[in-house]
Length: 312
Figure 1 (cartoon, one colour):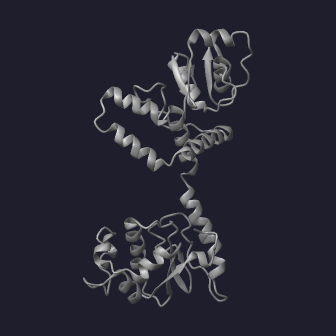
Figure 2 (spheres, one colour):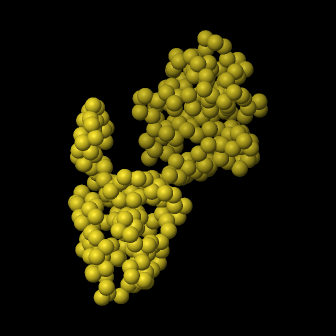
Figure 3 (cartoon, one colour):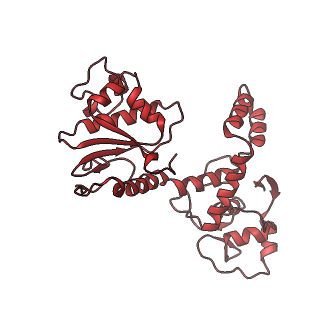
């Protein structure tokens, strides 16, 4: 069979695998293995010896897929589902547990790819080439794209590792901010919502004796329609608090501040896709703008960079 790895094309067959491994001790299996003539081998070690690719980074997942294609039995991958048909290597759709070395190799491969050419430029070129392409042209475009099996594998590993990054940032920022804003006679009333998104029992990200607060930590780029709707929905949610506590929304940068304090966008239309309970808050008229409602609701808009300058 032929396979591609880190931009190179290589060949491997079952006979070569058996020949190169037959006189060597298999070594200790920790997680993933391949069975060669009744012996279980650590899958990455077996792949390196069989191919001679001792310096090329690859994942256990990639090696398992290669050996399966050659007909060898291998370890199962966690939460495994059937592999996609027609790829040069079988690649399970579920992700295996990856080691630190595999994760670092994946990060490096992805960083090299993304550093070489701006992704938006690459996608524009590929879209232009694919328009009107037949099967042969589509295959040529794929081969020129750099979207190799190992790049997809690396992207999935990186995505898996950073999947909770939003929650981590949300939790870290709120935890930093709380001691900065609490007054001497103020204390937290309810368990704060440190993870991104509130649950029904915790209406606000932060609820104290003196204030209710929401935190929006995304960085705005200038075309932020969805972010605008989400932020304004939080403002309306704060306005539903019927106590005399301060209402505060914490954002990052001048764009969200200006949106809430200066925007002439219609408030009712901005809420058209919000949860039903906040679509018709008290005091909202059909002609009212976002900025007008924010002022009427007495919601203070606070730029977090004034408290944590490292945010951007």
